[in-house]
Amino acid sequence: MAASIRRHQLPWYFGLAFFLSWGAIVAAVWAVTGGLSPTPEQFQRTIPATVPAMLLGPAVASLVLTGVVSGRAGYRDLRARLLTWRVEAHWYLVALLVAPAALAVPVLVLWISSPNYAPRIATEPDRTGILVLAVVLGLVAGLLEEIGWTGFAIPRARQHYSILWTGVLVGAAWGAWHFFVNYWGGGGTNGGVPLAVFMPLWFAAVLFGQLTAYRVLMVWVYDHTGSILVAALMHASLTAFQFILNPLTPGIPQQVYPWGQAASMWLLVAAVALTSRGEMAGPRRFLPIHVRSLHKPRRRRR
Image (cartoon, rainbow, N blue to C red; front, top):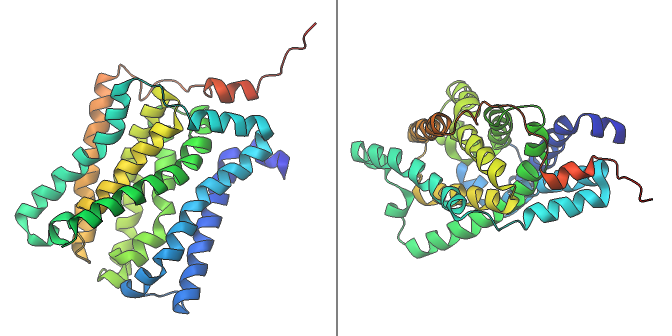
């Protein structure tokens, strides 16, 4: 098994992360509701169990596989990249501001057309509580998930693919990983959208949606910084502003506004591709210096 993991690191990572997260979600939903067809209200009651269990999947998968593949040296490398904070200041600005810029414009445009698209921050009475909760959720989700997606998956994928295709691969997996939350959380049949409508929309969103586009941008930022910390902050910004801005109206609005956000994200990807002198579709890159050193035989001192 260890030899198989070393040869096929990405498939093993995706498989283990999905198994841990989806298994934990299904178990938590079953324990709380006694079945696997919760209403949106029932699913809300499972969140204290399902969300932490889900978030641990990528982190645990990364830690387990890092130990198998690289041992203590792998853990030292993971820690070094997690604590890398001395990067140029403009990368922090990119990490923190891309999400609110891309998310806000479509929601505001749709809000003008219908009150059903009013951003959450405009409809909730406790706005301070929403902001605090958004920051906490963003930081927790960003840290736990990026220990896996950026800590393990992205450096391995970059050995074989460009920034663009690494982002598409990991982004599509990242989107698919959210299936149960998307479906049970109000966007599926329980939110008023028939399964036959939800599934093709969801599948298309996994391949072409905002998470895939945003992951391409995250890979681009990580390529320039080598910092899991910056990636975690970029992830945190997306999670926090989704919580603050995204409308709560169930049903069709839940299927419409994400496509506007996806379009704005892909426009940003196109802008970066046009201004970054071929970086997006450029050649593969070897692992960052810390990881690269793990795979080179050490010379014996004479």
